[in-house]
Length: 189
Image (cartoon, rainbow, N blue to C red; front, side, top):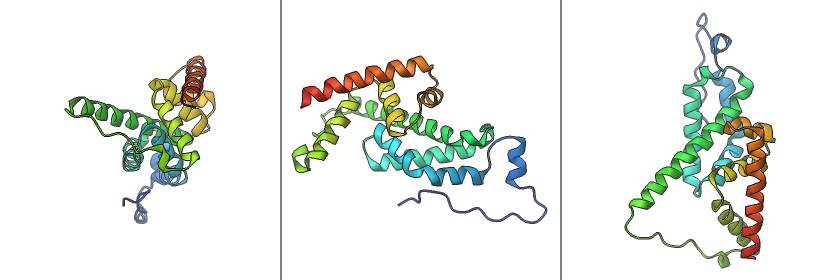
């Protein structure tokens, strides 16, 4: 299993320029990025889990997000936006993973087997499965807005910033997504 955070960096020798000096010029420090990643690993993994459907892919996406933000950390001018960069990267990488899957499904000659029956689990599992299915039936933007707004517990303004949308668009996607979820859940009940 891959570790959820990178190993500690070796100490710098006396007289060498540190990451803190580099951060003052441009970007966030490696230490700040690593601490942010460690502190929010579970929430980033949960965010990916709501956009993807298997744990291994979620872990891969979250770790790839850390690697990408790490390599582009000089572009994170405000260290307080490090988490936003990580979240946005998780969302973008999840989109890419879904695109690859869709392309793979189009190229398959035989249909995929059905998912396991909800009767194998408890009533709560059945409800959770129904909600996940209903979420998958939403438009991509509606699903992203609802996941960020209600799972990641972000404000509408934060969601707008992460997805690059206007506040009005976030509100519209959110209300339409909730209405579609309500309809989908009522028809399955």
